[in-house]
Image (cartoon, rainbow, N blue to C red; front, side, top):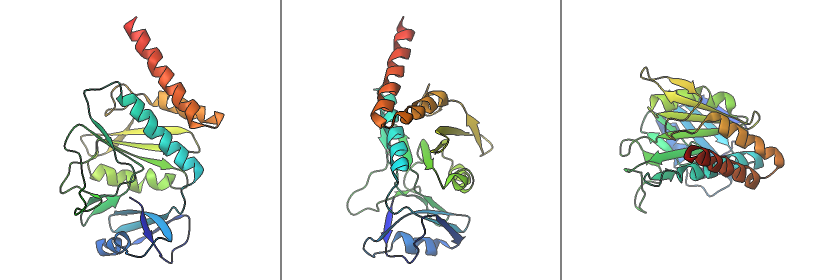
Length: 229
């Protein structure tokens, strides 16, 4: 979830400081009209404020492409329900909060919001997502460290980091010991390989998401035809 405020903080880099849950709530619930747009992260008494301003072109391109290709992938499983809630703030009250670029629920018991309810996912009320992901540029170090530890602590089964500069997806599957282990295929999205996603991201060299989306769809069709034959 993106929070708007007239905060005096103006840097485009992530800003990190020691803080309490109450400090986090001051940012989350700031009633000021929009001026500054930022994403929030809170864990182990550390608050990270990422002033995103206007989302950059590359970040938007990668985020939208990943969401589109996952939507296409989900069409192979018409009996399953897929719900995408990217950028929605996820909270474990008093201890942790973050707003992943990608949030995927598979199946039922999916968070819903009525007008009178809170506009974020309270994990005291809802189950954790089946998969979350971060599109990374200047935040790559944080996404592979602090955020990775947070999502593991929340027991989210699968975590992706999508590197803009490397055009690479890193998939992590939660193990019984509570830590993530890198994987070459998705657990939540049965059969989806890292290699296919990376090859799809390479298609962005052509300069448009339409080309990458068509290429991804063609690969799925090709693989389906080979399995049938």
